[in-house]
Length: 354
Ligand code: SAH
Image 1 (cartoon, rainbow, N blue to C red):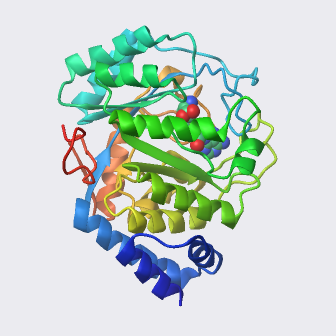
Image 2 (image 1 turned 45 degrees about the horizontal axis):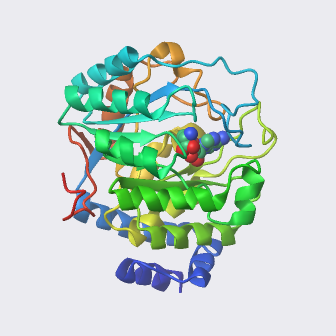
């Protein structure tokens, strides 16, 4: 019965809410293996055994928001705040380029210190110096005008997880000034502008139900993003969720497999959070259908200051060490990190095809 549902998802790339609930609720080790096997085949059809790499540059940990789950939330007084200068960001890119990265991801808290002109200036310089690289932004909620300006300056992709598709659940994870409607509106606008868009959610966030997860999948089914970032929720000791438990590797992997079948050519990272709760998490993620890794390129001196959750891995390693470590880990499971922009194969035509 479960296998039939997995077959149906593989064939039709969509299920109903009840079917997703049924699958998640009744999963067992056997259905998981069945799913992962199918997910790997779909992944290999589109991406072979190549693994795309993104160099993550965490350029600021100042944040005006106060998300209850996040370690760098505004009201955490124990964070040593930092901002990288443009020169430091460009140094990260240079190091990353030499290591074979052809995508840079600029991620940060929502830092009002930067106005649109500052961000545009950074984007222009990166794209001028590295015209063969893709640039991804992960800097939260902005106006349509700002998103448009960043895109025109050369940004190619945008990551903005929807976090949870259920409005009530959203309100239990975020303070009242953040609205689920605006989050979704941002994603819609980013897509319309022409970005390759990434959405996603945390697995096992406090209060999350199986129904919530089914709604997250339905939302992705409707949005048809080019990328989906999911990883386990992990508590941070200085947040209101300090005492909550983490999401599990097992459920995260199952959802990765489902997402691969639902969006066959999606860019799907095995995230750092997955590698944090399980020493083999990233390998398991790749074997469940993921095809992207996002190692850290941030300078060593700031690594341990961008702590979204406790025990984050790779905070003491040089970029080159991370790169080599992942190369080795992927080779051991028969996969191959490549020097490539790693665009989504969903984009066969249209303005995204650059
Ligand atoms: N400010 C940007 C970047 C956020 S950090 C934005 O709003 O998009 C990127 C992602 O890390 C978030 O979208 C969230 O899903 C995840 N994250 C934050 N805190 C986390 C935690 N405690 N455990 C696991 N993931 C977390």
